[in-house]
Image (cartoon, rainbow, N blue to C red; front, side, top):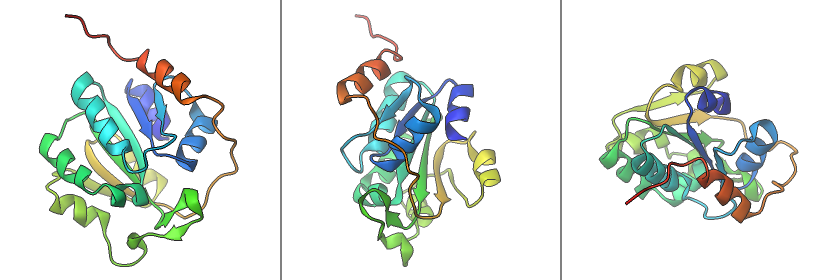
Length: 176
C-alpha cells in the first residue's frame, strides 16, 4: 500500500532495517527504495535528509523500536518539517527483527504523544488499512498500530553497494 502510493507520488522510500526491508523488497522492489541493512534508528534521519536535500516526496517506514532508539529525530522533523516528508512508524510494540522482545510502547509510551510533544505539527495515527490509505497524502508523522510478527521472506539479494548505487541513480545530480 505504501509502496504503491510512493510510486503514484514519484516518491523515494526509505525502509527500516531487518524484516520491514525484506518484506518491502519481496512485495514491491524498485530502485527508488532504499533498504536499510544496518544503522538501526537512522531511517527517519536519512529520509529527512533526503527530503531536505532533494525536494522530493519521501516516505520512511520505520519501527517503534528504531524510533525509540533515536527520539531526537522527532524534534529534528518538527524543526525542519518538510512538506514532502512522511515518517510512517509501524508500532508492533516489539523489536520484530530480533525476536519480538517488547518495546516501551507495549506499556505506557505513546509515540503519537511523543511526536506532538517534540513539536511535530502533523501527527496522525492509523489502526486499519483504510485509515493508513487515507493518511498517505499527509506529511509529518503517522503512527500505525500493527500486529507483531514477520512474513517469511528471503534476505535481500543485493549488496549494500548495489542498493546505494541503484538508489542514488534515482536522485538528481548536483552541478557547480
